[in-house]
Image (cartoon, rainbow, N blue to C red; front, side):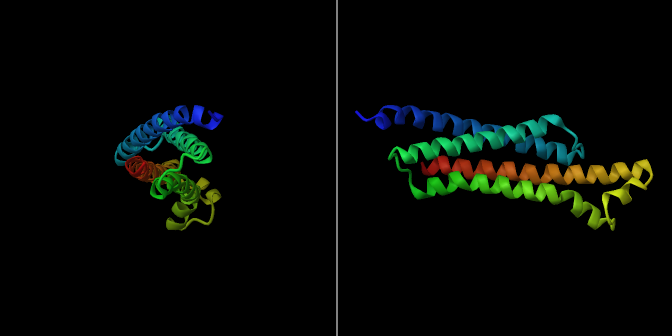
Length: 157
């Protein structure tokens, strides 16, 4: 029996388990982020830990899927598509998150973050809160989209 046939079932089981964990962690991150966003309490370490853990599980899931593909355990193309799209969604969300601060500054008519430093403390906090809230909103939506895509990947696998 070739080595690839011996460990392919184990890799497939791990792929399923990690996929389930990825769905769960991203769902918790999305729901917790939505709650924090709605309450206008964007400063939370646990939200960011959940988002990063969800992203890590998506990457690990994709690696196991790639290993399965290399061992001639071919999945339907829709499964592969729905399995890889979360990587793209996470990447694009990170780009939007990075741009969030500039979007808030532009919306409020500031040239740079240095201009915010000249504001009274209450107004500075308002700008920072708006920036953090936008970041949480972007990453919350990303996590929820990832949940939908991974659930669809599981359904097509």
